[in-house]
Length: 351
Ligand code: ATP
Image (tube, rainbow, N blue to C red; front, side, top):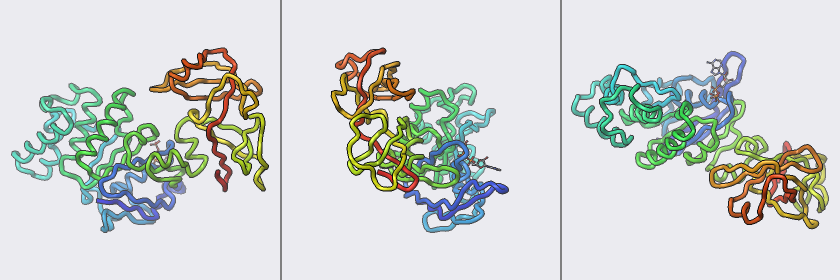
C-alpha cells in the first residue's frame, strides 16, 4: 500500500502548520518524518491517518483518494509515545482488543494473538498486566496491538520517546527487523536523527511545515540540500569563509588558495567532525592551530574537542581510537586541524 500526499496544507487559526507538503511513501517502506519541535511532523502523520482534515490537498492510499475518509475506515495501526495500553487488561486481551471489537471469533483471536506474541518475542507473558512489564515490553505490546487487525499502514508517533537510551536503541533495531519480516508500509515520527537513520528506508526532513529534503538516509546525510539540513543532521563545525574556484576556503585556515567566486562576500562553511583531521604540525598546510581541551569516547569513535588558538572558536574532530593512540593525542597538546572535506552554503548556492 503506497501513500501519496499532494500539496497538503493545514492551518490552526492563523498558524500554518503544514504548507503545501507533497511526498510519496512507496509500498512496504519504512519512512521517518524528522524535524525540530513544531515543524509539523505529528500534524502530517495525523493527516495521513485521517485524524486531521487538511485545508487543501489530497491524500491517496495506493490510487484511492482517502482525504475525507475517517481514520477508522482507512485501516491504519497506531503506536504513540505513551503506551496507551489498557491497564486492567492482560497482554493477551490488550493485543486482541481490536479484534474483539471487530467481532472476530474467539479461536481466530487466540490464533492471531499467539502469532503476534511470537512476532514481538513475548511468548509466555500473555497473562501479565501492563504494570508487570518493562517500558520496552509495553511498547512492543502496543505495536502488536496496532498490527493485530492487519492494517494496511502503520503509523508511529515518537514510539520510543519515553524510553531510556539503551532500550530505545534495542527497540529501534528490533522495529527494523520486524519491518523486514512484515513489510507493512510504515511512517514514524521522530526528532532524533540517529533513530531515523538507523531505522528508515527514507527520511523526510521538515521545517516550519515544509519539506526541506527527502531521500534515503545516506543520500540526505551525504548531500544535504541546504544549511538547515546539514546543521540539523548531526554535529557540525561552523566556520566563516569564502567560496573559491578551487573549493571552500575557511577564514583563519592559513594558506588560502584560489580566487573567490563572483558575488560572494561572506559564507558559512560546514564541516562534519569526521571530515577534519588532526596533524602534529601544519608545516605550511591549510589548517588551524588548536589545543586539545577534552577527549570523549562516543560509540566506536573518539571526539576530540579543541580550542582554536587564534580565536574563541571551539572545534570538534572525530577519529577512531587507533589513530588517537598512534598519534599520542592527549589533553593540552597543541596540534594542527586540517579539513578533509567542507561544504559552503549560501542562501542560493551550494558547493
Ligand atoms: P513535536 O516534535 O514537538 O511534537 P511536531 O513537529 O510534531 O512537534 P506538530 O505537533 O505537528 O509539530 O505541530 C506543528 C505546529 O502546529 C506547532 O506549532 C503546534 O503548536 C501547532 N499545532 C498542532 N496542533 C494544533 C492544534 N490542534 N491547535 C493549534 N495549533 C496546533
